Length: 282
Image 1 (tube, rainbow, N blue to C red):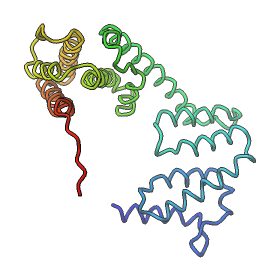
Image 2: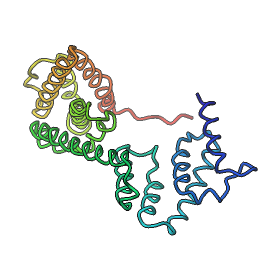
Image 3: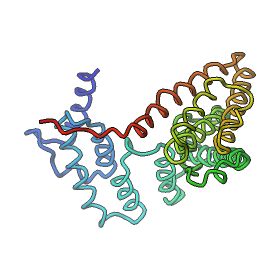
C-alpha cells in the first residue's frame, strides 16, 4: 500500500517539477493546481521528502500570490493555507468552499452539481440545528450542569464529535444518541477529577457495576443524579437500537460503562491517597 501511494504521489508531483526533479516556478501560476498540491502535501507523515518539499513550495507561492488575486479567491487561498483540507473538519471545509462558490458571478456558479451541493449543505445545516435543539432539551432536562458547576458544559463542542463520526441524514438518530453518551462521559470524568473523594468514587463505581434501577442513598446527590441520568439514557438508547435492529445492547452498554469506571477513571485516581512520588534514578 505504501509503495502504491508513493508511486501515485510522485506521478502527481512530476507536474510541478523540472527535468532536474526540482519544483519549478512556472506551475505556481496555476492557483487551483497549487491548492491541490498544498492539500496533497499534508498527507506527509514525516517520511516522504517529496511531499515535504511540495508543502514548502506550494505554501510559499500561494502566500505570495494572495496580494494579486481578486478578493474572493484571495480569501479562499488564505483560508486554505490556514486550514488544509486533510487537517480540517469536512463540514467546515464544505462551508468555506460553498461560500466561495456563492461569491462568484452567477454565470460561473451555475452547474447542477454546484447547486445541488449548496442545497444539500443547507438541508444538512437545518438537520444539525434540529438535532442540537433536541440534545439541548435533553441536557437541560438532566440538570447536571447546574447541579455540578465545576463540570464542563460544552454541548456544541461535544456535538461536533458525533457530527464528524456519523455523516448524512440517515444517521440523525445515532448522532443524537452518541452525543448523549459523550456528554455523560465528560460529566463522569469531571466528577472523578474535580468532585468526588476516593471513597465516594469507589462507591460510585460499585453502583455502576450493580446497575440497579436506583442508586444507594449513601452516594452524594450529584453522583445519584448522574447515575440516574446514565441508567435512564442507556436504557433509552438500548430501546432505540432494539426497535431499529431487533437487538437490545443494554448488557453491552452496561459492561462498557463498568470498564470505563473501573479501569479508566477509578484506577486513574487511585494514586491520590497513596501520594506516590516518582524517584530520580542514579
